[in-house]
Length: 245
Image (tube, rainbow, N blue to C red; front, top):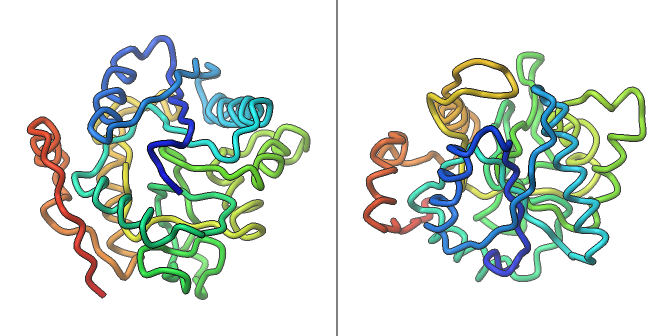
């Protein structure tokens, strides 16, 4: 798993050039190139879902073994490059169906038995009725073994209007082995207009808060302020990820 070499697509609505420019800066920070995918514009989660499945069809046609999809509302964490490098070095033979680089945790999770750098999002500890699931697809890596399972969302009338993240949690993660990093790589932006929910959202706060609520490994306080993170990135500073048990 060499993240820089994996084919990448950025999903962007043509009417949101501001988002595209923002995402380009975020991926430049990681040293990643990408291909632009013009988002399917349906003013709801349906457009996002069909954008993902359309890219997976492209990946199948081109024979990509894996493909990384980036939605245009993410912000890279200053420790991301360090953590990704450690995952590359320590998880070289990892077998996975989906590797969600920055999910929203809405339920208790287990660390992976395969690596202390990973969380297992296929096998969960018990949860209560107040716990929903694992959501968000702002930066997500699909292995070819998952392509058809995800594309199936288009084929079943009962699934067709699922949000992509809910569908993955309900129908894929618990069927095929999937993971996320021990800390999120690129949560969603804060204080930004959501074209899906048609309102201003601070998803950065929600994702990072929930992460520290449900994960044993907490995001260090210095990275919980999105404006301070921006300063690190503007200066080209990559913070070291230090693993603490």
